[in-house]
Length: 159
Ligand code: CO
Image 1 (cartoon, rainbow, N blue to C red):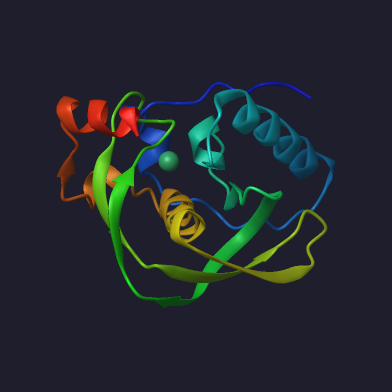
Image 2 (image 1 turned 60 degrees about the vertical axis):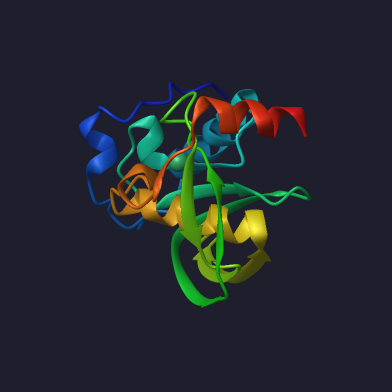
């Protein structure tokens, strides 16, 4: 186990397309274990492998009930729309206004290569889309409407 350093948005690794995972071996399991530890340590909702400098199609999403390990994930279905605040561990201290589907269903492999499906609404749907974008080198800052202002952030913290 070990914490990995989270790269910030100036790093080239965050702007590249990640490769598929083909070996479901001890090295992948170590990456997933380290990413899980790093996600918990940073109080994030999701983490993608390129954020720790690994250009492979691997993301974690914390649903609130469990931390899903999504290997080679793809979006199967989306529905509805939500516009709300979104942040990223690679863009520390900032939040943007981003439009996402209200519902998303994904298909992915687990750490042993078994395919499964997962679905979620609101924050979870937002997180699926955000993390999958990371695998194609896309940060929310490239698709957001605008950054939230200091005043808007201060207001949110009072809620
Ligand atoms: Co992110």
